[in-house]
Length: 95
Image 1 (tube, rainbow, N blue to C red):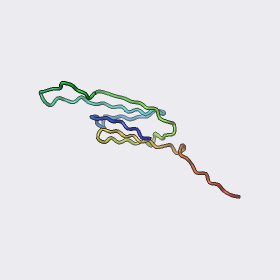
Image 2 (cartoon, rainbow, N blue to C red):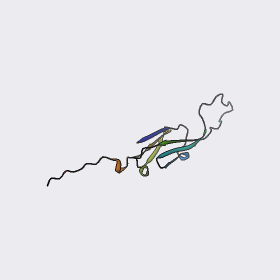
Image 3 (cartoon, rainbow, N blue to C red):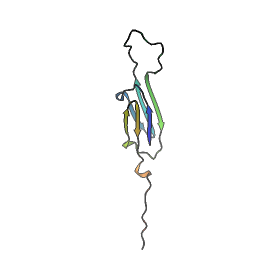
């Protein structure tokens, strides 16, 4: 399973990804941009502050082997299937 979150302006160091039971939680903080010129802003469209999102996962995933990458403001969390959930081949033996 792959979970993808678009997080423009969020530093990877400010992200926190945790799991408890079947719940995956992504939280972090988008910091407010500081004014660099004296003109100021008429309108700001990018929100700032803390955020948190939780999603319920199927039981067939192995959260212990999850991995996450954040590139160009896109967070990708990969969670493999648990070994017990993968299909198995059963050999047939003759007598």
